[in-house]
Image 1 (cartoon, rainbow, N blue to C red):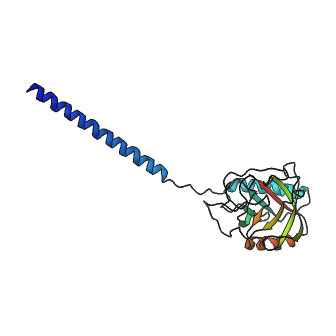
Image 2: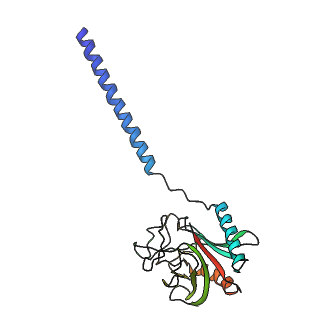
Image 3: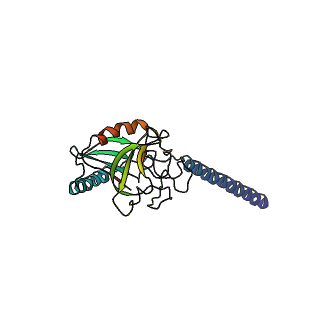
Length: 220
């Protein structure tokens, strides 16, 4: 009688242990599945940072006799599938145009989006990377790309002083999109800031009509 009781008790303990392990495994599986189903959150523009940059840009434009009506700000800290190219109106203190803009591919494949959320930057010729810093938008000319129009870019800082030598110019590219494509990124070229054809056609008239040099500031 006693032996039978002990055997039954052992059987109950074994069953409880198996059930507990099974439940624990189920919880672990569910937890892993939940983690794998997480989606990346869409980044949001830091408006305070943008307005602070605009304020700095305006001071620079006043001091250097640049156009004080507007400037172009490019925030490379944003994912390339988001609109990070801004035409900023100094008078209204507002962004009047927002567009996707491409950056340099570096050692990645040309036209890929491999560095969509982690671009690198360089001032070295042949690096195929974009350069940070302030630029004076220069002469308008003929391009082989997009709408066949380009603007020369004069680098004004140590980080972008080789822009002309590297043939870094502002132009359009038919591979660029008009609307945001996050979580995908924009196609990457060899360092030029590139817009879609439609976007470029919106920016071109205000650059053409400016009687003073226009500032383009690429930062992160």
